[in-house]
Image (cartoon, rainbow, N blue to C red; front, side, top):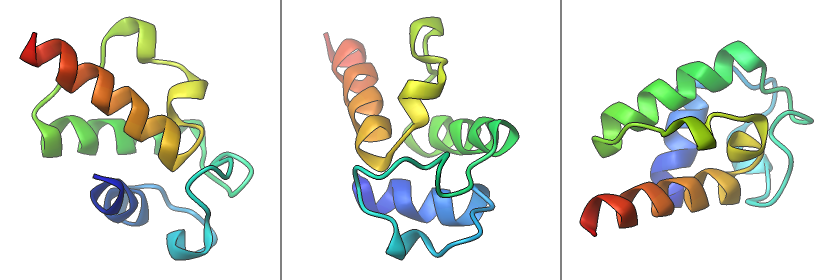
Length: 82
């Protein structure tokens, strides 16, 4: 999952640094992720994983790092499976 997240961040995140140089727990906003780009990443994640981010996960914290995105997706996928 992390590799897919990283691929989508590379494609849609418009980061000024290579995503390979950003640690899983590093703050993506500090790395240059803009609010607009985070929305583009979210839409790409929804399409890739066939999910919809619920309102309570539509916040800066959910997209603050690769680990945060993975945790949000895991929560969504577990809720779908239940």
